[in-house]
Image 1 (cartoon, rainbow, N blue to C red):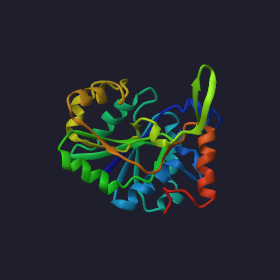
Image 2 (image 1 turned 135 degrees about the vertical axis):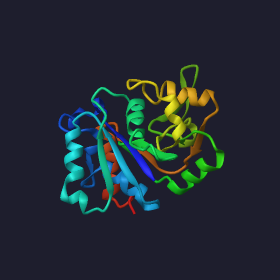
Image 3 (image 1 turned 90 degrees about the vertical axis):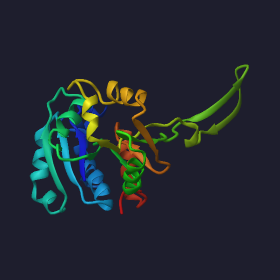
Length: 236
């Protein structure tokens, strides 16, 4: 199975580290988060990874060519998709390298999860639609205030179930998705996914387990702590 990993963004909210590397190359537990994502996919099925790069693409290229990465046994190549290309454009260009594939997978290069990849693929094959997105619930970070006449009547921690479902990446895409990718500058999350949804060609695979993006230094520290304490759900 070919897996497209989107790894070309600027990572502007993570300027502490992205001044000299793209966000997927930021390390947690001594390895780039890109490596963690690939290892999780490979746990379920043999994969050929196509890393769609942009900003500081040479850092990814050097990593994939390094002896340390070669020794992992992972099969990955990089594809420079332009520094100003958006997510939809990166997928569009990557699909040009997957012309013989009826189905490909795609995800963001800055988030980890313990999603069951085989269950995700089985779900996609069961509905015969063009695209599947993994739906996740964001972690609850703030306390809930119940207020009446300016008095706080209750203070409690929010449950994760109180949050709505959001796009967690981990897509499965039929080759027909090419018809929805018109522009290199259009984010996949805008017109392409909206049009797929309106056409009833986008299905949601609900993942109730662990999922965490790494958009900020705080989130990196949280992921590092899980690894240090031996509680990282995506490491096996």
